[in-house]
Length: 200
Image (cartoon, rainbow, N blue to C red; front, side):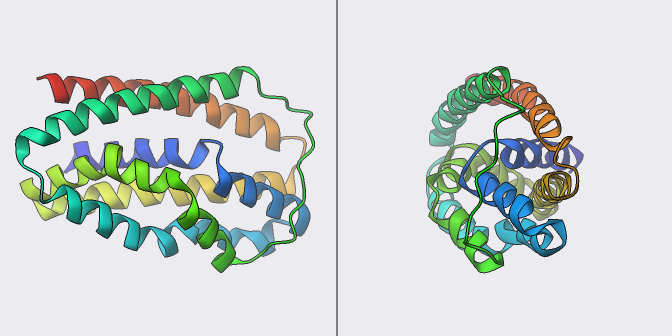
């Protein structure tokens, strides 16, 4: 179970710290409304991901075992692509760039932003879905451990982003850049691991 828990923690950190529609929304809300009113928005993935996971896992559970090898290879390549993009975002990060404000607010809106973005579907089909299915087939405890690690890390990281940008604007961009750097390293390692699982 521990290997799945660790993988979940790593992928949760990577998913939460990558630039995307949800992260942009949370940052703008934290800057414009403050962290106290925005902190609940960190729970958005818990609200929106359930149907996404069920859809992706139900499809993946129907494919034969040999096909999962190609999913691991495709997922590994996709993760390495994300690692490169995240590294570029870290390298080109402008700590002095102003954050735009948004008039949209509330947990339902945050969940809708996450549900309508394609990233969650790609992530749960190519990357985390095959790991969840493989872990669940070995033992349901492995699947639960993976999901627990993923959402502990993801929600914790999103909450940290909201707290940082909402209460300490000077430290916020530097903290976010640090998350991008850590995320690019984690994605590189997990991408290579996925390729290894696909090949061997």
